[in-house]
Image (cartoon, rainbow over all chains, first blue to last red; front, side, top):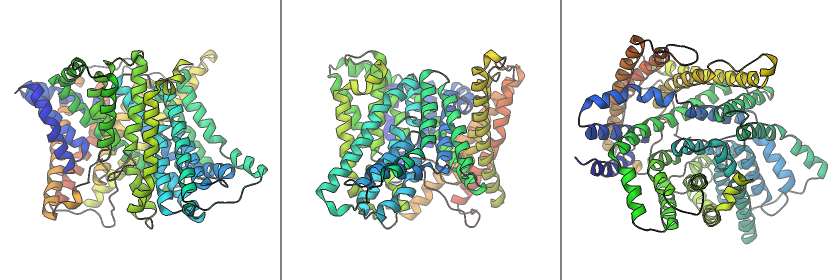
Length: 438
Length: 172
């Protein structure tokens, strides 16, 4: 059978399996192995390939950063910094219009700076901020929408697990990607705050407010969050300046957040067991997808489909921006139903060669980093778009009194702000790349 | 029997996380050693290799627990609209596929382990036999085989999880 045809046909087969709720990683693994077998035409090379398949993926040095970041996120949760971050943000902006909601966003951004996962950020901040927002008289739709959107800051603000995976697939420098993600991440937080402010101005009934706090108390509240700042500066700064490798940086992060949790009395036996189990679950999930994607991408590479497709797109004379927008829209649509990591692992090997062949007036490295940040943002939008938005479910599970309809209704202004931000970043690549040109 | 399998998988998840903590501590020690190179210290020799073997061990330890917990990423958008018999069949198919693929992978991994042992290949820095890493991961991989088989039995209605066991929604 013609390998190109085989690879093209494998997409619908893969999608059917996934929509039949076969785990995504397993679906890719099965289709990938079967496809490779067909391309080889015999079992011997396939059996040979399978000898190292699992072990080589699981023992990959660059991927070892993922479980360490997940562990760091768990320890950060146990360290109780989420409460302190929220109090500090509330002390400064709580009395403004939509101030408590904006404080929740600010706290999410702060937590995102020591946590590389969106779901962990949504879960942790949801626990702290949902009751506070309720007490301040916030409507359920606004509260859950804000926290679901705020959760994505966990990934958008470095460190970020999705960026690590992108860096590996596109063979880019993790430190530079982290640096480039910083300004767009801050813009995301400011955008979400602006959304809350505008929504509350339009409909003041959606939110109450808290009285302003005297200045000495404000500084005291800010003083309580210094460990977060310190850990962020050491981990991200250390990686960026090359003082240690990204994996070592993740190790430093895990040890320092673990130490913080221990000092603050968060490491009880039961909580530690839960944290370990969450780390185990998160890591296993990522590596199952990684394993499946490795098998599937080997098959795609054997079939030559990515090269053919990149060549075809290049020959059509589409404008570079047309191709870029098509890819971003593709992610937005698939993000409504697919998990962000699976999407990236599945599509970057195809899209990246396509995009790196286009001329945006940037150097190849700049194009790769800019594209990575854009992809990061659009796949994260998928976490808050119905029907399948993991962050929405996380918040929903913590606030059963808020209906999923209300949550869906509350989140769309935040999705809109994401779309505006992506558009800005596409039009002005310099916003992303300025951090690299310094 | 179900208590044994679930208990073992769970303890392995804890053990794997403990391995991660040790990797993290070792990496920090290595950084400190490197920073103090002027004082006669140095990085932990072979830290790269230890991280790799340790991560593999941890991941193999995590997989059975995640599977029993139903923790893998799925798209369940259409699931609610499937009739109950179809769901049952799909569960059996998914669990059967997992077991079959894992059986294949573990079989091939054991061949690789035997080959590395036979040709005495060692790692670059520590001169540690490569097959050791495979052997350490083989044990949890075999537990995985048992857990996947058990999960298939559950889907077939021939076995059940321990009382009070709750599966988790997937996420990352």
